[in-house]
Amino acid sequence: MKKTIADTITNIIKKGQVIMRSQLSIWVEKLSIDSGIVLILISLVLVAGLLFYWTNINNDLLFGGYGRLGILSFIKSFPYLLVIVFIILFTSLTILFRKFDASYKKPFIVILSIIFLVVLVFGWSSSRQNFGKRIYRQNGRMFGAGMTNNQNSISGTVVQIQKNLIIIKTDTISQIRIIVSSNTHFPYGQPKVGDLIRSVGNWENESFKAIGVRVFTDVDSGFTHGQGQRKGTMRDQN
Image 1 (tube, rainbow, N blue to C red):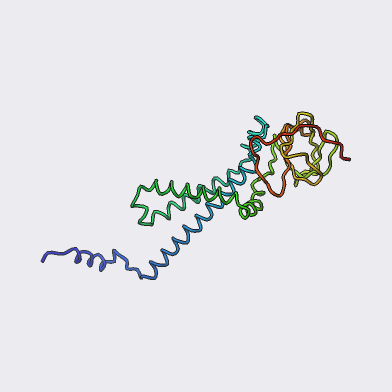
Image 2 (cartoon, helix red, strand yellow):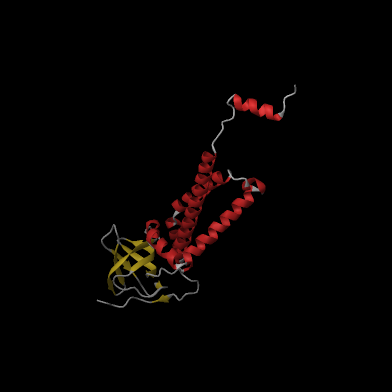
């Protein structure tokens, strides 16, 4: 008697080559995959939003008239860790998404491209909303959102203002002297005592010679190209 396909499958099951699973275990696995994909998607949107927020806060380094020093400071202070996290999350999403039948109905690269674009759009949109700004403002400080300290950029709180001199303090240094001149520009207005500022320029011995000084506000608005770049020495406010 010739064996049918049903007989062949039955023999495979009897030999233990196919493990029977309950409907409950299948639903638990599906729920776990679904939940994992949702959590990863939310995380991707938040990481993308934080990257957009960081760029918006620091884009004056590119467009604020600081020249080469601003570009170098932007590159040095960029939160590359967030990019690595984004890549890891997206790779994890790819692995999970391959378990869905939908991933085989169309070219997989097309589906991933659509997901990537959707994540970027939602991330960008969240970085422009007030609720998103509040979230990213709190977490952005950990990645130097507005707080870049390197060879060409320093940030801190103004503790004293003198003629042609701003004194700030940082978390690690008690006082830093920032020298300003008639060539120093202030794209966000003149700073006051208590303001959080960032200065781009060069170190001269123990002092920092500023090309530009940015004042940060609670709004944390990004730099808009064409925004006025006011120049001038600091008034003596002692």
